[in-house]
Length: 311
Image 1 (cartoon, rainbow, N blue to C red):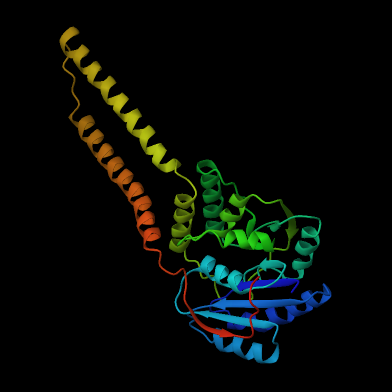
Image 2 (cartoon, rainbow, N blue to C red):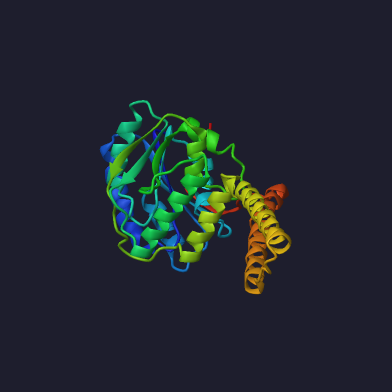
């Protein structure tokens, strides 16, 4: 198998027919052997039924149904476990990633790169989502050793050896974009089209994006804990200096230092800082707790289509 395409989908019944036709046309133009693996879980519409019907008509399009909602990145990993292509394309199923751009990724990869990711000229999201995304990317690049670009997404093509290395990361809350950056194999980028969703709506609410951002940051950086140590040292130093100032003012200059409001404000500030610090440390401890259980990353409910054994 030359190319495998892994697509996580949820509630995308309306996009499946167009996605099928465009994928089939794009992959046929490459004149390679291929398979397309859709990974889905719990849907509010008839996505899974539509995918089953698609497999009856076109055996190159296969389906994995997970038993529960494990998240987009885990769904992709389930597809990577089952795919058999020498090159693997990862893309979304909402047509914001253009199937026609697979050829660009594939041709660039053949120059000798293990990872080729698509860079979009712009993102067709709302103003607030764009602001949030830019802020998050700035913070993650500031606090983490893993760097990312604002206009990149999951849309990329990877080599078989990259897939094998990704599957060695047995994390319960994986972030594939950062894992690929951490692997460090030769990579390149190409400009791709920024499409718009034709039907349906985004599966990421604002709080989902916040949780995803927190998970990525805490999974790939220990700098927040280090910052807490720095803040603790700075506030301790300021408190000591303020204590010296109070003693000098009272016993050497005979000045009574007022400051009930100041004291209350400082106590409130320090109390809030302590609670915030405990919360950050608690997030790290929670991740250690989750990882230590070694639960299965996902459970497959059904498979539709014939999957080759991965080598």
